[in-house]
Amino acid sequence: MNLPQLHSITKKILVALLGGFLLVFLLFHMTANLFILRHDGGAWYSAFCHFMGTNWLVKIMEICLLGFIALHILLTLWLALTNRLARPVRYHQAQRSKTHTTSKLMVWTGILIFACLILHFSDFYFVKLGWVKGEYMVKVEKMQDEEMMQMMQFAQQMQMTPDELVDQLEEQATMYSEGDEAETADYIAGLREKLEVMDILERAYTEDNFSNDRKWIRHLSYEDRQTLRRVIPESDPEPDFYYMAREKFSSLYLVVMYLLFFAIVFFHMRHAFPSAFQTLGLNNYKYNNIIEVLGRIYAWVVCLGFAIVPILVYLGL
Image (cartoon, rainbow, N blue to C red; front, side, top):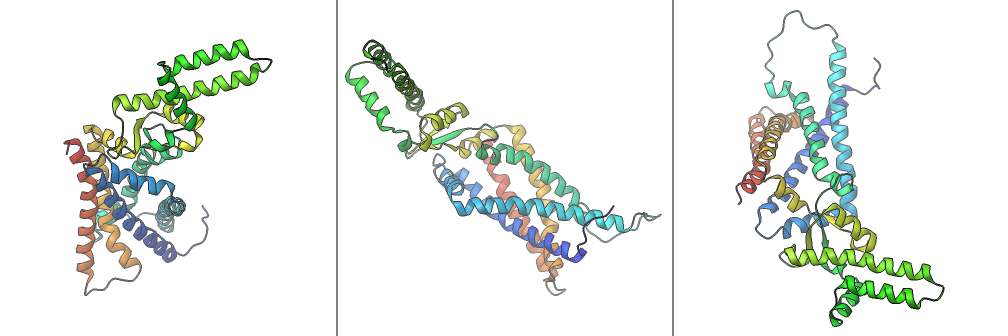
């Protein structure tokens, strides 16, 4: 089997650099997740997600991040495969190695992490891309279409519901239209589309699906999102990640699976931290123990920071 030629040291350095970047990103991601625990109706977390979803620089970084994850995985598998191909014949007698168990399992824990990441992306990132249905939210100000608000006010003045008003307008237009039936039909169809938006708005008021600051309408379904995008394109509903996260962490099964996932991440990080220093030539016998301890502390802090969110949400805190 012929693989592209790339020196083993080069591959290891690239893996270490990409792994170091991902370690820093995990700390950033963990810090953002802690916003879910604030009792502010998701104001902080939603504001963070809104910024991350609308800032063009962040969008570029997201693409880079996905590329770095993919490249880190591919280089690691490539390195493992080339090392194995270098010795196609195994030892007759297994040798006892001083290599730590977590080091020997790095490829396997990495594969498990990748599989779990696919599920994580389907729950959140793919919802953002519109590939998977989720829950959505929209700014109230973007729902206040001028024509729709005027129609609602006029219906109140006439002591009619918006549906009754549109029915009456359609009847009058049919009676008095002179050869412009198609234009009249399009106008009435546009008004009926506005009624769909009014239904969403009325439901939001009835169920009080508003953020604490009353600036966002929450708990919109995928169908609501499609309606808003069709009728008011500038509304641009966003995924309600705060609501989706709290909904998912209300399930004990998902909480347990999430904790198992970060147990795997912990063992992967525990070796990855000092290994990156060693690969990049930043270790030294004088402070190797310090690097090892810092790696353990970093892995504990990050993984416990992630784990505490589903636990506390499940407990209703």
